[in-house]
Amino acid sequence: MEVDNVEVGKGASKNGSSDASHIHGGDGLGNASNFLPKTKIPRKILKSSEVITKTLQKYPETQILIFGPMTNIAYHIQNNTFDSIRRVIAMGGAFQVP
Image (cartoon, rainbow, N blue to C red; front, side, top):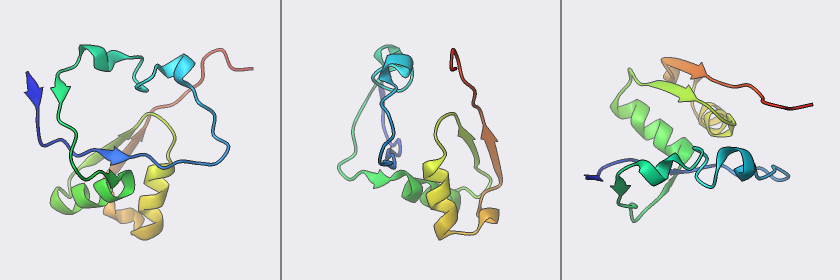
C-alpha cells in the first residue's frame, strides 16, 4: 500500500532545542513509521506554517491537533489572524521529568 498526496511540512527549528529521539524515536512517533505504508516524498517541501496556512485556506473547517512543540502554530499565528484556526487541540505532558 502506498500513500500519495500528503502534505509534508518541514518543522521549525529552535536554537538550543534538544534532541528527544531517545524518548520519541527517530521519527518522533516512537518509530511507528516502520509499520505505516510507504509514502512518496514531495519534490518541494514547504515550511509547516505554510502547510497549515494552505490547508486552512482550502479546508476552513480543519481542526489542528498538536502533540509536540507549538512553534509551527506560533509561526502561523504570527503571519495570520488567530481566528483563521477553527479549533486547536493540544496534547502534552511529561514522563519521568524532574
